[in-house]
Image (cartoon, rainbow, N blue to C red; front, side, top):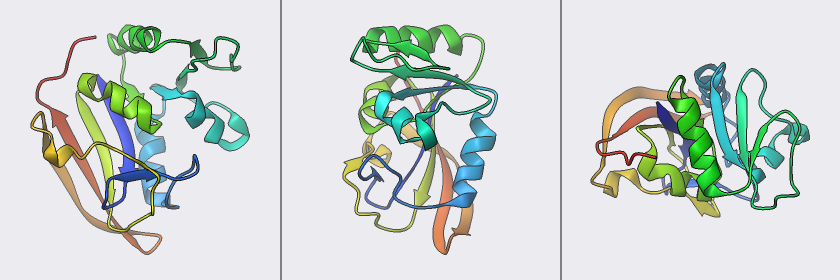
Length: 169
């Protein structure tokens, strides 16, 4: 199965200066536990935003860089969106693949994902980049919604959206 996993603020903002908008330990724990042992697929800037620009441990990391000279250790390097989709499809036939950013990758892969694990943050993070507003897209519906939690004094809610008509890769 192919899923996107992320958090967004109340304006659907997801990032600022190639970083996260909030420090949310509960959300980070959910991300870690959900993606551990699976495949994560991302753009180059997302990899570079990690501590030491190192891939996430205990996961297979697929990284898309448009620059064919950019190849990173410990990841599967791909250099075109077509190649990126092909790798995602290959892995998704036997295991879960999680799209983990950035904004352009989320947007381009959205038609193909079956579900979106979205942590809704009840705050304005003054974002520079945004996620598609799933509540306005007819293909997406909420299939699961948690209670509200306080995470670092900020209200969050874990919401799962289902894509009613995912495109085949």
